[in-house]
Amino acid sequence: MNKHLTSLIILLALALTGCGAPAAATAEPQPNPTHEPLSTIIPLQPTQGDKPQMNPTLPAPSTSGMEGMIEKAKEDLAQRLSIPMSEISFVEARAVTWSDGSLGCPQDGMMYAQVLTAGYLVKLQYDAREFEYHAGQDGALSYCKNPLPPAEGAPADT
Image 1 (cartoon, one colour):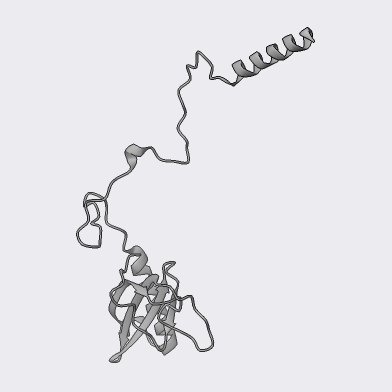
Image 2 (cartoon, rainbow, N blue to C red; image 1 turned 180 degrees about the vertical axis):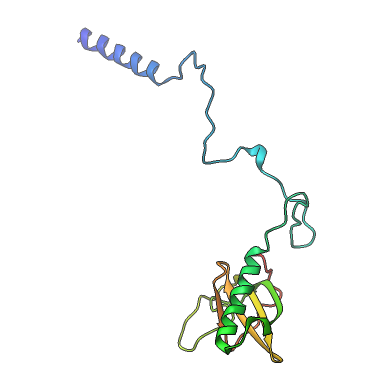
């Protein structure tokens, strides 16, 4: 029995010393490559009202995405009306919040998520008539024959 007790104490001592941190750890911890260091995080300026202000030293978001949507809408409308693109006038393009998943263009017999949905509105004009193209956050445009307006009072940048 004495032999078993001595063996048990030795095993217990080895187990306890093996669980501790090495006494002479000289290697520095390596940064995790999937996370940026905290020093690169740029804070937002204090908020005014309900909307935070962007840091003015940061570059403004590119408008090339919006310009691309406008060009695609003009191309589609020119094809639909069988007219040259040069005859189509740009009215407006802006980020909006749609009242549901239909993006302001519900179709009969379809069901849509009843949540505010961030997206875009592009308006064009030809021959005194306005034409609307609606998109979600992904920027995929759809011609909307019977458009509904965006949600009022909802923030456009959700």
